[in-house]
Figure (spheres, rainbow, N blue to C red):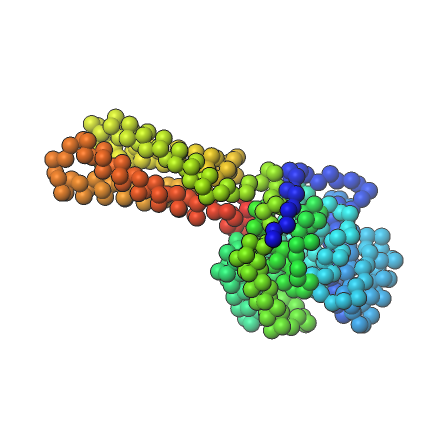
Length: 411
C-alpha cells in the first residue's frame, strides 16, 4: 500500500545565514587512518578558499576498527569546522543517513575520503541547490567534459552498471555510484525515510525515488582519478547492487514506491489518469481536426492538395503540441518547451506521411476524386493519426518521468 506523502513546497533559494553552516559535507569512512587527516585538511582548505558561506565537515565513521575514530575526534576538537559521528555498524548508506538526518545545514553533501573527485567541482555541485534551481546534484564521470583515470576493469563495471540501470529501471541520470553528491535538506528529510538500503546501493535508490517523484537532478561533469588502494569489494558490491535493482523493480511493478507524493508544487504535476488525458486530448484533437480541414480548404486552390495538407498539418501540429502540453499533460512554463515542440514535429512528420499517403492512394485509385472525397479520406486518416499521436505524446514526448542529460535531469 502506497504511503501518503505531503508534497514538497515551492523550491526557493537557500537563505545564507552567515553564522550557521549553509553546507555540511559528510565524509563517510571505515578504517581510513592513513587518508583521513590529509583529506580533511585538504577539503577544509579548499572550502575556506572557495566557498562563500559557512560550512561544516562531518566525518561519519561507521564501525572502524583502527585509529580512524581517534583521528576523527582529534580533528573535531582542533578544527572548528569539523565534527565527527561514530556509528556502531558498517554501511555507507547508514553513515550518510545518520549524518544527514542530524544536520541543520540547508544543503547536504558527501564525498569519498580518497578525494578521487577533483574538488574544483564542489562549488558547481552545490550552487544549483543553494540558488533553488535543483533538488539534488550529482557528479558524473560518464558525461562529455569529464576526465577520468581508472583501470579498465572498474571502467567496464561502472558503464555496465549504469547501462543496466537505464535498461531495467529506465533512469535518466548517467552515473549512480560516483561518490560526489549533494541534496537539499528539505528533500533529504522526505527521501531518507523511503530509502531502505544502508550500503553502497543507497545512492542509487535515493536517486531512483527522487527521479520518479519528478524532482530536479543536476549533473556536474567531474575529473576523477581512481584510488588504486580502494578497499571496495567490487564483486560483493555488484551483487548487492543487483539485488537492490531487483527489489526496486518489484516495488515499481507493484506500485509500492511512494514517490508521487514527493513532487514539488512547482514541479511537473502527477500525471492525470488515462481517462482524463484521453478526454482532454480528444477535445484538443477535435478542434485541431476542424482547424486542419478549414485551413486545407482555404489553402487548396493555391497550394494543391498535398501542399495544403502539409501546411495545414504543420500549423495545427505546433498549436496541438502546445495545447496538449498544457491541457492534457499539465506542463506549464518554458522549461522543456522547445524539446517538446521538436519531438512534436517528429510526430507531425509521421502524421503527414499517414495523411499524405492516404491522399496519394486516393488519387491513384480515383484520379478524378472530388473535393468531398479528399476531405473524407483526410478525416479518416486524421483519426488514425490522432490515435497514434496520443500514444507517442504520452509515451515519448511527455513521459511521466523526464529523461535527463547533463545539466537539468528533470524538467
